[in-house]
Image (cartoon, rainbow, N blue to C red; front, side, top):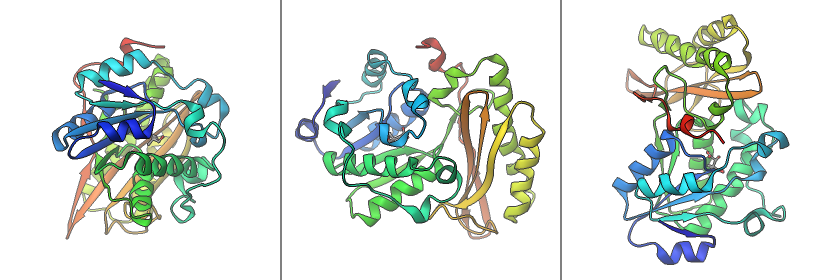
Length: 299
Ligand code: PAF
C-alpha cells in the first residue's frame, strides 16, 4: 500500500474507477466491509485516514480517539487498499477553514441536535475529500445513518460526480454495532450497551407484525431502552433516509436510530427500513462470528 499526504499525489496514482473509503482510522470489521465492497467495484481503492477535529464537539472525545497508524496500514494492505491518504493536520485543517459546508435542514434532529456543529465538521471534510480526490465512488456505513443522508445530499447539492454507496452495519456476535469507541467499554458497560441492539430487534418485530406508526415504533424502542440499567438514553426516532427528517408513518425508506451514553461512552445504532410498495424490509446489518479485531490491540 502506498501512503501519500497530498491530494495531488493521491490523484496521480489513481487508475480507472477510483473508490474512496473515508475513515478516521483504528479500523474494525465495519471499515473492512467498506474496503471489500470498494475493492470489488473499482480499479483503485483509496482509503483516507484523518481524525477530523472539526467534527468533535467535545475536546476530550478528540483527545482520546484511538489511533494506531501501523495497525491501520497493515489492515489496509491486507484489504487490498491501493492508496492510503493520510494528510497532516496542518495541511487539512491546521487553520480553521473559512469555508464551512453546513446542511441545517438535515441536521436539526438526532445526532445534529445532540452534537451541535458535528455535521458541519463532517460535511466540510467530506466535501474537501471529494473535491481533492475526485472519486467515482465513495463508501460509507449505514451505522452513521444521518451522516449517510448528509453525505448523499451534499454530493448532489454540490454536483460532485461521485456515487455514494451505503453499506450494512457490522455487528459483534452478540449484536453490539461495531465502533472504534467500543474498546472503551468495560465488561459491565459492554453488557449494558446491548440494550441498543436489543431495542432495535424489538422494533423489527413490531414492524414485521405490521406496525407503521412512528410514535408506536419509537415507544417500543424507548420502552426497551428506558428499562435497561445504566443507560442515559438520548433519543429513539424514526427518520426518512432521503432527508433525515422525522416522519410520522413508516411509508418510505427510513431508519429508526437510537443514541445513549453508557458510562463515558456515547453509542449510536439504527435499523434501516427499505420500502418497496407495501413491503418493508429491515436491514439490521451483519454479525461477526468471532470477537472483533478491535480487541486484539487496545491502544
Ligand atoms: O464516519 C467517519 O468515520 C467520519 O465521520 C468520516 C466520514 C471519515 C469523516 O471524518
